[in-house]
Length: 316
Image (cartoon, rainbow, N blue to C red; front, side, top):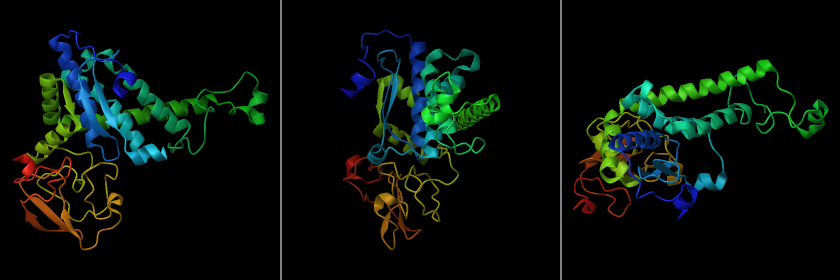
């Protein structure tokens, strides 16, 4: 019901050419993969290439309850949001080339520009501009009379030099996330192709299916993460950094096996636990920062999204 209200009804009788379906599939796959691989970002709930309202497809993210309650967003989250918003256009460029991109990313650009502008002019997240508010609520001066501004009824006038600095900072922030997203998607072409193929086959992919695909890519050493240090118990491949105990993903469900993860209630002492929320054939046991054993028996048969062990009963 929420999807119908926010996005619109599905156009089940709509006819799309195979070329357009492929374009939409890669576009949405770009959003979903970048969102899924970010440490501090909302969880991918659903990807669809069924047209809804004015959109040819949609990727739905589910924010954490903590973020919803607090309303607080970190600088890393906002940067990730820009990167994810650019994912659709980036995927189009990778598949079709820069000269054959479409207008499908126009709303994504609007979101990305709004976030970057707010970071620079409202949130004090630009070193060049500093910790100050520029232009009131982003609309510039409140009226034609300068005196009204200095009486506390609006923001002071903004000089041309400061406007140019703001524009340069907004452009820098967007370009950084563009390059970051392009590098990450090109490094994960296997995953991009697999997700687009699955979308073309069944039109909708939920978050659990996407996580399975990411785990499969990790198990085959075909997954490249944004950070050099892999998030412990995030997406597990052959190598786990046993010295890393700081939690890298406190917002992700089912990914909280770090030693001091706040979602586990604090720092772990001598408790033994599975390093891998999603493992391959073996699960490395993690005790006080060290891998002490490997276990093939499933240690979490009743956990949602945790059934990739070799003999897990939920795998049959």
